[in-house]
Length: 148
Image (cartoon, rainbow, N blue to C red; front, side):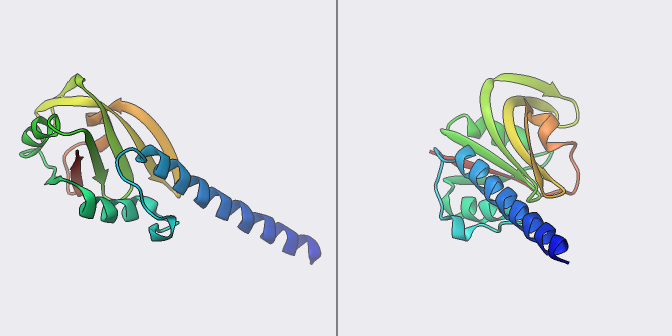
């Protein structure tokens, strides 16, 4: 019985540590764009919380779809930072607008970006062109936040 309690305690401790690591990684990822109090983050799904905070701090916001993305990306070049959040599971930061790759599905060139994608509670870091990070146009909510 003692072994079972110790195993449960260790498992809970590791889970809490993993959640804190997730929060720290995402906080660092956007630290030069805006800051926030850790207590405002949903520890299980921090990207959803970051989405809510970005809505209040962004200079400009776009809902991204096949029709709006070209205009939104052109507008984004006038701002210092561009974040895109996909359905509360993917946080993307445009790294380089000059380095881009054409997308047939989105009908525009997509810039080089870096992202954190949360799958099964685990964050996965990716660096790729935006088209490969936001996926094909579909019913997912994609929001672009622009910051000065």
